[in-house]
Each structure stands twice: as structure tokens, then as C-alpha cells.
Length: 388
Image (tube, rainbow, N blue to C red):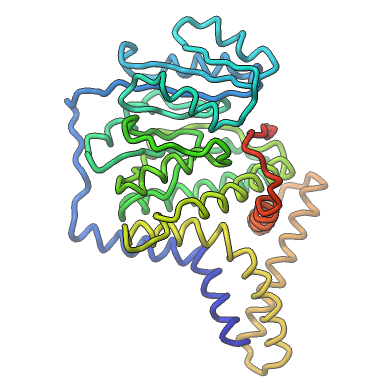
């Protein structure tokens, strides 16, 4: 029981805190021996294709197009494709009003990955940039992304996701905002050490020639597209100065729906990305992938429950004060989470309580996502989450 306790505690702490600390130390050490890649300011810009898959986004699609057309990049080197498969509102009609945009539409809704695969043969850009219909990019986003392709080792570049959090934010907004700030920091260090381990669909890019076929039933397409390229030995870079902005989920219920889908897709990707998990191919990348993704999407949520139960048993059957202190700390943490839930339901804003609450919501979502995937209850067609 004691051995199981310490293994569980180590893995939980390592997954959420320890890996970040270790990554920071490794990056500090690396800086003593290597210098960052120097980008040339006078290099020839590649042609790019901006690819947007939209589903029933009539309320925001025109703003997205205006934002895309305003991006700082030579217009003669930029192709813009919008795919609206399955949309039943006025999304396609509104896009058709912009002659600078290529519209692809089918009435059949087969999922985002199926829509992307349909568009791949029509892409003309050397670099393909994927971005969501409900996010807005900063003006220099494309320029910041494509500079990384001066390094021939780079096969994909992930941009940064930024959540617009209001001062009086609720648990979903504050928690999601904090989560993505921490994630962005880990991604920055991951890339500095060696490579990122995936990409967010809000903004990422690939060398078009390196695109690897991805199954049409893929749940988290962005992650799989980038990881398939990494499995062939290419680096996934990270560029925080290219960012996509979006509002937070409308409430915790909507955020939970999104997180469960991602968790189901996470398990699906782990079962399919066998090469990424094999240290005999790219050991540093495998270390990053398991530490940053696999542990979160598989055993850690279960270990949280195991840790609480075992710790309670030891605390009541052992005289060592240390076990009692750790168990008390767990009780306090989960009590704060319950208080956060209580305050959230009553629209009371106490941000310090949103972190433990959001942490518990995230881990519950992983458990629910695993169950949903194993029951084959998660389809590839994307469900829109309501946003603020």
C-alpha cells in the first residue's frame, strides 16, 4: 500500500507540476550548449493556404473572413479555402459573397477530418495553415509561423491559443484561461528542448508536402495531423507571437462537453500513434509525448482516486504524521473544488477557487472521455461548444 501510494503520488505530481519543472531545468542546461536558430529577415516567403473548416457559423463567419483577409502576407502568395460541409444555416451563402475565398460545400456532414481530407487535393500553398472559424488571428500570425520553415527540420508549427478572460470571469473562463497560459509555457519549453507534441486546431501549420493521411473518423484532427508528421522525424515548432484569440466556453457545462470530446480523441490518438510512443525511434520526443500527453489522457485521473483512497487508509492505520498531512491537504483541495462548484452555481466570483474546481472538471472529463470512446459513443463530427 505504501509503495502504491508513493508511485501514485509521484506520477500525479510529475504529470501536472513535475514535468514542467524538469522541462525548465533541461532547457536551462541546453542553453549552455546550443544557441537558438537564427531566422533570416530577407528569405523568400513561401506560398500559403489558409484552410478553415466551418460548421453553422453564420453569426461570426463574415468577421472571420475579414480577419483572414487583413492578415499581413502577400496576397499573391495566399490561397484561402473555407469548407462548410453539413452546414444548414447561412454560413456557405455568406462565404460565397467574398470572391477572394474558395468555398467548398457539401450537404453531407462527415466530420472535420473528412472535410479537411476533401480539401487537401485543392491546396496550392507550400505551407498549409489550419485555423478555426470562431477564432481571430493577430495580423502578423502567418509571417511568424512561416519563418520557422527556414529550418529544414521543422515540419509543422503550432501557434498560441489565447482565451479572452473578463475581469469578472466565471470558473470556465478563469480556469480555461489559466490552463492555456500554463500549456503555452510548456509548449514553449517543449520546443526549446526538442519538439512540441501536437497542435491546437485554433492555429497551426504544416509543410503541405509532409501531410500524412489521417483516418476520417479522427476525433482530434489537429493533434493527429501534426503528430503524424512528427512520427516521420520532423519537429513541431511553437510560435507564441502567432496567436488565435477566442472567448471562453459559455459555462462549465459547455467546457466539459468540449473536454470530454478531446479526452476521447486523446485516447484514440494514443492507440494509433504507436511510433510516437516507441523510444527506439525518437527517444526525446517519446519522453515529451508520454510526459505531456499520454499520462494526462490515460492513468493520471485514475491515480488521483487511487491516491486518495490509499492515502486515507494509510493515514488511519499509520502513526506517521506525513501521511496525515498529505491526506488533509487532499481533503482541503477537494473541499475547495466543491466550494468552487457551489459558488459557480450561484454566480459568485472567487477566482482562487476556480483552479481546484477546473482541475477536477478536467480530470472528470478524461474519465468520461475514456468511457465514451471505449463504448464507441464519440463520433468524429464536431459539436459546437457555446462560447461567451
